[in-house]
Structure formats: C-alpha cells, structure tokens
Image 1: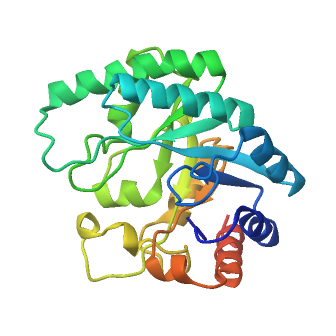
Image 2 (image 1 turned 60 degrees about the vertical axis):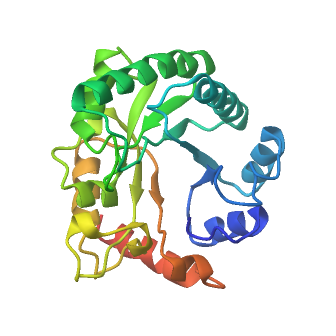
Length: 261
C-alpha cells in the first residue's frame, strides 16, 4: 500500500532503497502479482533476488463468513503462501453495516471459521493472521475477542493476530495481546478534525512527528513485551498512492520510527 501503482520490480527496488527487510504481497491490487496470475515460484525468486523476505500475503477477506467458496479461496491462498515462503496470511472479517448479526451469532461464526482455518494452516505450515478492523460495520473489532476465539479453538501457533495501530485507535480497542501477535500494521494519522471512530482508510498516511495515533508508544510496548515480527507500513491516502515517488517520505518515516525505538 505504500506504492500500489508500481510494478513488482520497482516496488522491490523501493523496499530495498528505504531499508525494508520484507514486503507484503497483496491480492487486491489490480494488475499485480495475484491479478496477473504470477506463479509463486517466480514471485519467490524475484523477492529473494532483491534480498528481501515475505512478511505476509494480504488478504483472505470475509474470513468469518465461512462458505464452500471461502474454504476454496483459503486453501488456494494458504497453498500459494506455502510455496511462496510467506509466514502467514492476513485475514480480514466481514465489514457490513447491515450484517444484522448479534454477538452470539458473530461469536459462533468466528469460531466456526477459525476452527476450519486452523486445519488448513496446520496442513500448510502457514499462519492465519486474524486482523480486527475498527470501521463501522466491522464484525470483529477487538483484539481480546480475537484472542479468546483463537484460544477456544486451540489455535495458538496456527492462528495469530495481526495488530493494526490505526484499527486499534479507531475502535478505541482495549488491551492488545502481544503474545498472540504475529504481524503489526502501522500508519499515521495527522488530521485532528475528526474523532477516532469517524476516521477512514484514506486518512492513513506515513508515521511522522504529527501522528496522533500513538504508533511509537504501541511499538515500544510491543517490543518491550518481546514482539520480534514484521512491522509493515500500510497507508491508504490517495495522495500517497498517486505520488510519482514515495522514496524520500517513506525513508524519512522509517528513520523517524527507528530513531525513537
């Protein structure tokens, strides 16, 4: 999401230029990788040749709406991830303000999906990263709810949490669970005219000194708790996506974060 318009080769060069150690491969960027049918073996070679690792595949959407179609999609993505060498797949819940489900129904659907995904994850050796989302209509916005469900299906190890600093901030979520977290997404919020819950994806920018989301504090807490996984920059600002070159602002953001950790 730092540069979705770039070709794969240009994106990998960008990652290397700013000192990143890995990249997330998305299946929702038109014309790239998944959309153009690139084989996992070819993608793996290109990433390795660039001196980078794979942080994740992003994402299995609507994972907690378990259907035969979702099962087929999950099996494909987990198999692709295994061949690619990706440690895990980000899994996003249903977001629908008209879903009409009560808490017991949402709880049942979450556990049904996680139970099925646990087997697929175990069979392929690829972790399922459950990502709570904080926007209106999200059917899963709590780290604690995700952690409880993972534990109740005995999914620890095969299932982990993807912690997104913006989603946490937007949902005013409670305590996070670093011991069950396998991936962290970060992005900055600089506009100050909206309450957290009224913010949306286009408000997400690079992390800098004007950030009001608390990225530095959250990262410090995660590292203090022993977190040692990837931290992935995930802005959705249209201005960033349209920029001809984000090398300097992205490098500056990484340097700002590193200098405070």
